Image 1: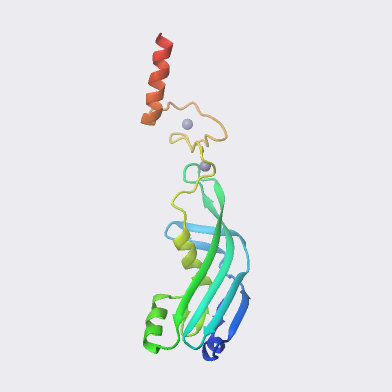
Image 2: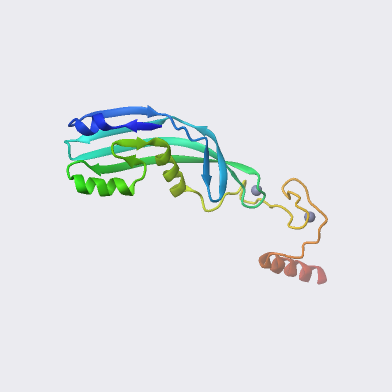
Length: 174
Ligand SMILES: [Zn+2]
Ligand SMILES: [Zn+2]
C-alpha cells in the first residue's frame, strides 16, 4: 500500500494517524519465501513538525513461518516492528538525500510494504529453533529425531557428547 503524504508535508503541524494495510503476504529473500501467518494493521502516526521535520512513527506485529534450523519444521515467529523516522522538510537537498537512503519513501509517497519488508530484514533472527533442545533430523535417513529415533549409527558424535560418553564408560568399567 502506498500512502500519499503530500497533504501532511505541505501543511504545517498537520498530524495524520492511520491504520495502513500491509499487502505483503510473505517475506521473500535470498533465504527463501516465508509466508505470513498473521499480521496486524500498521498503526501510523505522521507529523509535520513546524515545516521542519516529518516524523513517522509506526508500529505493527507480524507472525511469519520460518523453518527450524535443525529439523525444518515451521516455527511461527513473531516480529514486533517499530519505526521512528525523521525526515527533514526544510532543507530540500538534505531531505532528498535522506529520502534516497530510505527506498520506501519516494517523494511524498510512503511505501508501507517496503517499509515493513526492510524492518523484518533488520530483525531477522540469526537462529530459529522449534525448541531449545530440538534433536534435528538424522543426516543419514532424514528421520525427524524429535518424533522418533532411527537405527542409523551415530558416527558423528558431538565432541562434548563424546567426552560425556567417555566418562560413562569409565564408570561402567569400575
Ligand atoms: Zn526443530
Ligand atoms: Zn537415521
